[in-house]
Amino acid sequence: MMVSMHWFILILNLPVAAWDVYRYVKVPLGNMGVFDPTEIHNRGQLKTHMKESMIKLGFHLLCFFIYLYRRRDKMVAAWTLPVTTLRPTNQDLRHALLLSNYSTDRSG
Image (tube, rainbow, N blue to C red; front, top):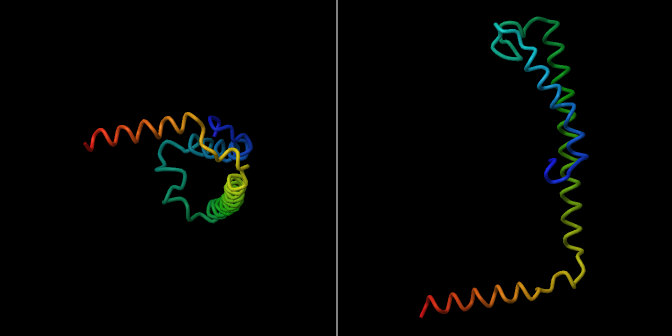
């Protein structure tokens, strides 16, 4: 995201990524992972995990619709390009000519 300059998306995802790293680092040494199967059925932990899961689900749904909107916006912008940008340049024409000469030389 940083390479393609999508700063809004990067800033939106940083808190969730930081929370995931924090949760992973804070796992006790004896546990199998963030959600230890032997302790998850404790009433307090189950409520906490369910609440965290619902918050993450809401966040990911929000991100999905933001991504969908941005994708649609880019596609509409691509369809509304001026006609002058759709004309081939001299370099494109030279490249097509070279390819056509290459293909006729190989076939003969």
